[in-house]
View 1 (cartoon, rainbow, N blue to C red):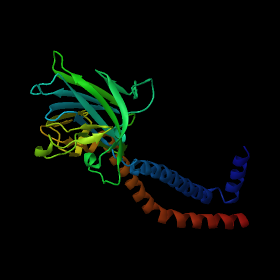
View 2 (tube, helix red, strand yellow):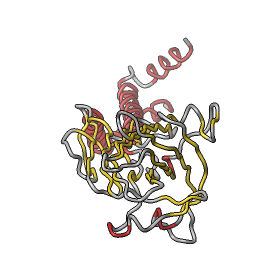
View 3 (tube, rainbow, N blue to C red):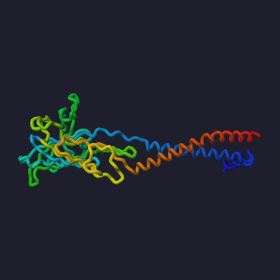
View 4 (cartoon, rainbow, N blue to C red):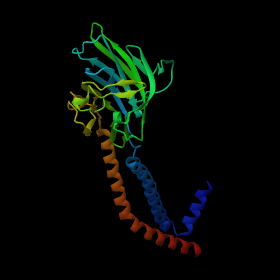
Length: 312
């Protein structure tokens, strides 16, 4: 090949190729340092890259159309779905009761599919008939400023007593996950789940206007939220509130207004990979810092001698 003949001619002119050999060796080492630097910089940038910020996950609040209703709500959160199991306490003597599940922010269901009573069939599921509407919330319902009314999706229906008492199941597909990854950490943020806060003395007396009707907070709400068990490779970090059982993201509280699960999980496998990458980057930087001050002057001197030999 032509480049081989040119290289052989250059080596012959510089006296057997000794100087050229050193010159080429230094060039190869420098090229390897540059290539390694590009690779390690890419790996370091991938490790240091931050994920998208975790936005507000909204809220999912339960109300009834009658005062004095004591209820239990069990919520299972998986990926982008929210499944609500509502059980009215046996102390309530009525044959039926109306409820409203008010969703804001990222807890709002996705659109699409066959629409029945305003509800997209593939995003809202229920054991009984429900109706979906868009509503403007009273600022007091969400502790928002009066000048910033909150728009919400409202799923309403009636719970009719049967052999199992008064119970309803509502499933909502939000189409949006509640977590994102940032390096070794997975940040999660669940909607505020429960109901509006009211002092005990006001729960029977205070109602909120909602789509032409009045709704009231439960007299007493027992709340369970299940976000699943932690994989063996993950550990919880800065989780609030504290989960009920170690190794799970499971919360349980009695007589509570709302629970807003937040926190981060650390993936030990990704953590090990990051530590290995950072170690190699540090090792490379140390070697490059040690060799470059020696290689560059040697390259300059060797190149100068080659140029002088070629000129003779």
